Length: 380
Image (cartoon, rainbow, N blue to C red; front, side, top):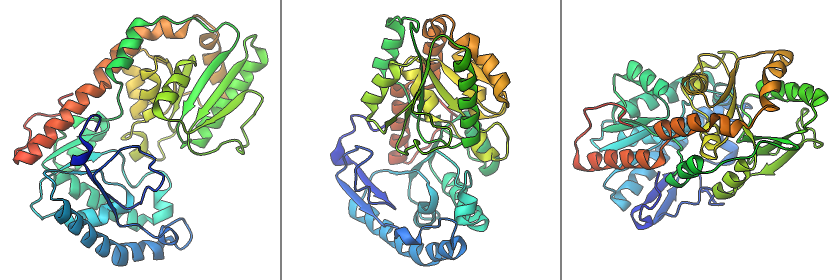
């Protein structure tokens, strides 16, 4: 979203030093109120560590953030609430009169955070995140489902849906290029961390069953920062761990595949994630021109998107036999990318246009700088 933004006009405050510069975004100044690694809650002593973070680290971090804001004197504060950064941010911006924009990317009380941080701490963080959101002059959310949930809970409407997107060059490539159907092998991509282990293992089991009776070998390519070669389902004979690649290289590798796989939980045990988050991998596949195999609960955000556009296969099959039966004919059939290309282009253009989202975010920043909010909702 900050593409082409002058780096001399960017300043960053965070809870982590980012010593490996993983984001690749240059800034004029970076200040961090780092959380000691031994203090970060990871199941053991989580309640005590959460109390120390809230009552010892957070007041100091709030002072540090106030000092940083005074030092850089920015025209606009852009806030992305994340885990324990929520507490010092809340101290600084709520009831302060500061004008700021909030991007809500995920809820804090999802995945294993209630176990890591403690349920009470998660409830506190979630409440403070809502208050940060409701006090913002302008806001954006990662999907419409989240925007509607935030408005229902806080009373504040969202100004835009902003998330990872496809650049104009990617849209042009989808429209212009033709693809050949798989001749000898079928290549399936998975990008990112595996957050739903059970569903991923189910998918692998289904692929094994297809491979046992299929003439064309199936290859599964796994991209991400977390190694998976020690997982019980990993099979080096037909799987390859590609590692964490720069965006341009990742897109090139994805374009060499025939399908992308995007799972979310098949149960609704974690509804705040399932219904109100959105997997970036789904967008990355479409931006590379790949049709998507979506495996998820019917009410999940990704399944709702996959149901609105015919961009691949969408299923909630909960057993390997059923899933294998559904996938086999589609995987070994005609050229999937040609079959779904028109809908991939329509979906990507309408929902994930990076240029349009950047313009909308810049408009929010301008409104924050001038002190006037939007009166319309979503806006592209």
